[in-house]
Image (cartoon, rainbow, N blue to C red):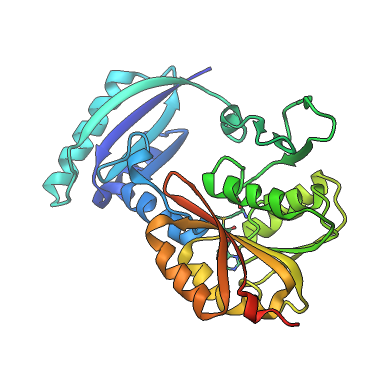
Amino acid sequence: MKLLVIKVETSHEVEDALTSYSQDVLQSQGIEVRRRSDFEEAGWKHDATVVELAEIANLPDDLQFMAYFSGERDREHLINEYRTKLKELQQLGLATGPAQVSASYIEDEDWNTVWQKFYHVLNLSRHLAIVPEWEKYQPQFNDQQLIKLDPGLAFGTGNHTTTQLALMGLERALIKPMKIVDVGTGSGILAIAAALLGAEQVLATDISDEAITAAHENIALNQLTNIDIRQTSLLAGVSGKYDLIVANILAEILLDLIPQLDEHLNNGGQVIFSGIDYLQLDKIKQALDQHGFQITLTMKQERWVGLVIERKEDQEEL
Ligand SMILES: C[S@@+](CC[C@H](N)C(=O)[O-])C[C@H]1O[C@@H](n2cnc3c(N)ncnc32)[C@H](O)[C@@H]1O
């Protein structure tokens, strides 16, 4: 079945009026609103990742309002209804922006699963592939580890450069069974990779409810029993020391983690940081230096930097 979509390029001042008009008067089947301000704020609010506005297709100037109707409805009549309504709102003194009304048809799909079309197997390295829950994949090497994932609402599909840099660091560091903590686990992807690559015990922490739910589900999906999850900020309330600390979070948050590293890192241990925009690298370097740490490897892709970090030699206990 087809759906008729009426799209209005307009201003945020008329969002409420268009919503109630579409639902109560025109009996639309649903509405969708794309606000420029949401894109600008999103990364900082939820994922702690930078949203690159230049890469967003069809970014609204202010507000894009979409109303969905049965494909049987009269297209020209609905366009005229919206034009008339916008004029009326303008006469009431509200800003209506460009007030452009257009119409198109789309297939009525299952919107809960439609995004799955864009998320496929990611053959990441000789030892790691990320396989969405709904896909089948036969590795070329028998010992390639498969991370099964359904990221849900949490960050961490494996597609983001920052996750890939962290995974590369993990693979390189995991040369023997070790105790690992994944700070800001999101979907659980790094904790799962660590367990599949041979970690002895993994702790995954995150501050967000969505991440904790997704991480629990993905760990179960991979049938792993050596990962504990804790909802907390960074390493607050975590006791004990680890051989490897991995964190893929924005630099501002990593700066808060740096003072907690020494207390939680075993002698000879390593830290992997990712999620650092190259413009923030100097701040991170300075903070590491002040806390007795040095960078032993720098990985860079696009604007993102990943680091392998160790204690300065004179800071290790003898
Ligand atoms: C960029 S995502 C990384 C997800 C996953 N580890 C990956 O590499 O794809 C950052 C994660 O850090 C979490 N986070 C942000 N601030 C945090 C904090 N203060 N303590 C713990 N987790 C935090 C976010 O909820 C999000 O899940």
